Length: 196
Image (cartoon, rainbow, N blue to C red; front, top):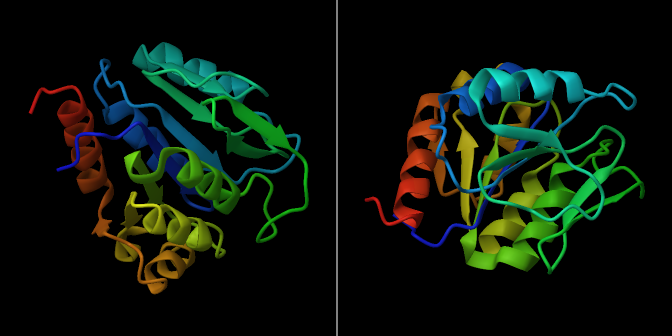
């Protein structure tokens, strides 16, 4: 079990909304590792009110990223619709409107590749349900940088294409159900704080 994790990345598309809510609601209130999430949603379809409601329901800091915002612990960050989300060397977020990747902006690949450069072996990436190939090349980048890579078990994914694509790269370390993903990242967080 790794004890140096600084950030957990999650990418999801079709069928991932409910899964993300389950994950967030299942984490303890004292969960420290930042969660940085790209979810494919239509441009102009802001979910800020939903994030605020989820934050109130869980007592956790959940927010849509703003450009140049500094990453903090104990916070869940979502990419805003219509923008790629990157993490810079100084741990600030950057948003841009460059070309779509895998027909997507925000792109999971863009986030994963930028985070791999910054965090190297202290990053975890998780791919959830989705209907395209976004995230596969980002998974390769995370694995090649020494990070830990996880994919949802495709048999439990409403839309398995995204996880299948990541698994076919040969760079996935763990294939887990949602319950197993929750258990594993809680363990990673506890280990990083010296509890386990």
